[in-house]
Image (cartoon, rainbow, N blue to C red; front, side):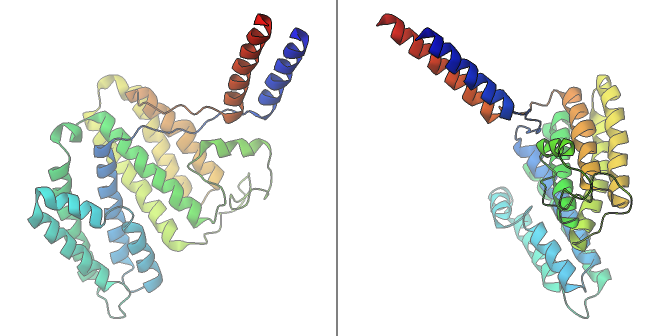
Length: 303
């Protein structure tokens, strides 16, 4: 019986290690203030792009839809509880901008003025909802940047028609098992020409959000402790590289590598940002099975 248990245990362990792979994805803890700061910046980007493309119904409607993911009735409702006047002003400004989208005779100058007005109201909303201590907290600001960069990856993936989730670092493992054009939507594993853009609006968002992340990083540098400088220097370089790669329409793999291998690790090191550990399921099953075998062996020993 003991021999059979040993054999069973070895088979379980071997099977688990054969299918297990490292869980690379950086999953950051959620912070409500960081989320709101990011949402404000993301909505600003979409409202500006909406105004810039106000006479193009396809592009402006895409940016409207995207903006609603960041700021909508729920956020207005929360704001109205603390400042109903500001909530009403912001809601009206957003509705006015939305109503201009796709109009044949829409004036881009007027649309941009409305986008600027909305942006200023959003700044007031952020000041209302986010405490000054969080505004000046480097860790909170770093998490906000992480959120914005996450949207950059999502939008760039949509822009190039990727079937791979660029936000999931685990997908980088496919680099070892795929080659050429085998990775659908990744533009191949080696860049010879610019990656085709299949969604112009999403590409506009990816470009603009990458620039926004750079601006947010400048603010982060001004409030970060001096001992974070070695890491932030690397983050700054990586953010510039990210923007350059997106502008050059590099492959999805090239873009996600900058984020997952350069930006995220250095932000984690600089601010001790807690990342939720991800346990590979096969390894977890091995551990459970291991415990089960030990328990069974003790039962048989008692008999």
